[in-house]
Image 1 (cartoon, one colour):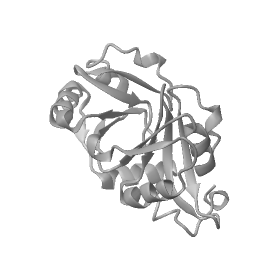
Image 2 (image 1 turned 90 degrees about the horizontal axis):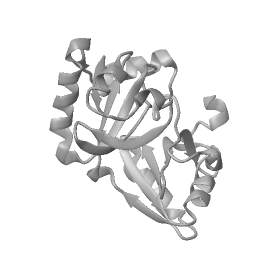
Image 3 (image 1 turned 90 degrees about the vertical axis):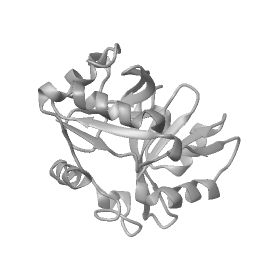
Image 4 (image 1 turned 45 degrees about the vertical axis):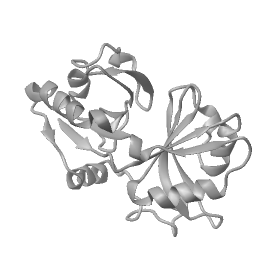
Amino acid sequence: MGLFDITHMGEFEVWGKDAENFIQKMTTNDVSKLATYQVQYSCMCYDHGGIVDDLLVYRLPDHFLLVVNGACLEKDFLWFSDHLSGEVELRNVSKQTALLALQGPRAEDVLKKLTDENLSDLRFYWATWGKVGGIEMLFSRTGYTGEDGFELYFSPAHAESMWNALMEAGEEFDIEPVGLGARDSLRLEMRYMLYGNDIDQTTNPLEAG
């Protein structure tokens, strides 16, 4: 069992009646297929087909959440901003968002100690709003390790207490704090792409597989 601090990731909110059409234009996957609270892996491309970045798209009840790579945060926000169309509001909420990833085969057992949400009903690449350790947050059954797990989005004001609560809840399952180097090894074993290493502006989605 491992707990990762991935607060370096970027989070953008997309609001407005044309939000879906805008994201449909800007990303390569079919956003219209997303149900509310469903998550989609996708990417956005330059005009020549090279990849700007890969990202997660969350359809929430009244807006979309886009999660991008931390190293590409400023570039990605500028790319979206330069292509805004229709009635759309784009918000960079990265500094207002802490993100922890609880990963491993006993992740559900750890998290259910801290929430009343029915985690067994939360499928892979789906999300929900709920309280974890008394803190209201968005969390999803997603990850970048190839293991079962959850990613938790919440206010940075609660980052330290949330980290400590998860570590305490996972103690009986031998939870360990894990760094990004280990995360990179895990994603390699799962054959997940890393932007800037396996894919970049010279790679198109077909080449990336």
